[in-house]
Length: 404
Image (tube, rainbow, N blue to C red):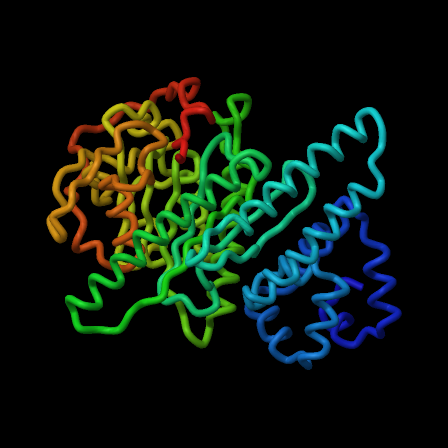
């Protein structure tokens, strides 16, 4: 029963049978999601879901949460509810059937991964923005996406795409906290700009998107994982467009490191477009110029820290930091904020671009709000860059920003 029309009309017993047939590991659920996505577009899914009786929607959330939670086009608050049920069920299933030997080790690894997901969606202090679990693949190494803020209503949505070493089990909490810090920066600017312009207050949301398997040192020098990630990112953007068809959000993609290359693949496919693109510490774009990316008004930015061993390598193609590429090269050296006067720190290393208080976090936040006019940047370096192999051995997980 993979057809959405069948799900709309299935009896309670048939839905129970479908739920019972899905392997507790999540393999079958993932295959079912992919099967539906292969024959139904996100707009078709959105139309199908909107046409269901509310009681049928509730039934599907309860019976097949892993499917509903990961269908692009379904409202995000619904996906969050479904994925939280899916998370609890998957975690409970591990405790009920822990095996021995290799099976036990796999169960332990999955349990640790799912515990990190639970920590990411639950790790917010009083007064912080709500977090929504909008993607969950429970099969190792896992995939997940957590939104900080409400994707169903936000005026401005920023999607953070990470690079190497980012896994659900090790970095989802950190990446979600990074999304929270960017959210806080954007929210502060919405208040400042609303007062200055005597206008309305934009609502924002930031997505910590680990929707693909990121590379490690054994496979980072190839594009295979980036291509798979680009397909997933295209689906995510199409899903956002479909879910928000009646009230479109302004969408910005921020790609860091290998994630920036993944983003250029997605945005040169001809299937989706966004309003702005920020490439941080990029090892190269698969297209030679920003004008070849589906970004409105060629609103593309790049940042390259002075001591970043990856940025400027042009290993995967064009260096976004050169003038010929056509992006705005963001200042990373810090200094005084020209709008507020506050001191801004420099972003020097590969993993420092989104650290709170840096000039690049400020710039990224403003770009996500459609206020690139307030960032400090200039045309890229006029010198051509010869491709070189970046020294990724120094870009280690332990170098990531450690919070107090």
